[in-house]
Length: 210
Image (cartoon, helix red, strand yellow):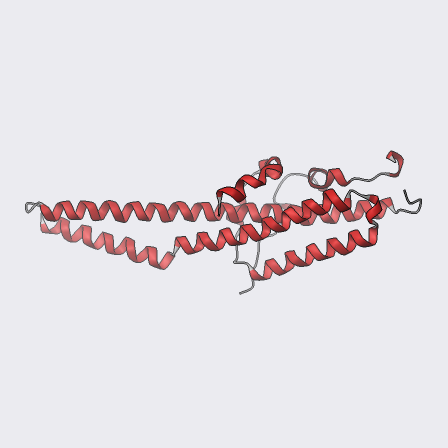
């Protein structure tokens, strides 16, 4: 062990890493939430158009169906189909999942960095800082490239996402302009120390423990 290792500096770096990883965690979960929502909306549109079309077909077969009902069903089908084309829920879902995947890959890289490098004193502070800056730069690039996501998607999440960090593989398996992204850093009740311990606790290095 190096006698001149700066444990205070390491603890400050661990806090910065935790803040970045925390924001990435909330962001990729919010994108998944949005993707799931628009996938359901698209499915509802599918079933709605199918159902109305079936009813219209049956009504046309029955000659006794009033003309006003046939016209109404046809207009309603056209309205639903037109709204679906304008809203493009499937496209929104796809773009949300792509963004979620990108942020999740970044989060996984943060976790690898925390467990393999930040937790190892032999890595050295300079290399730790360099790797952190690389990951932080990737997050800034994603913030510029990804579609905008608003705070309402974060509002649908809760702090249980911290319990899902180690099982994020399930989310990956289940889901195949400049963005003004919501900053989730103050969106939960956890303190900075709690977040730091939740996300980077295994990288805590204290001189008196060594």
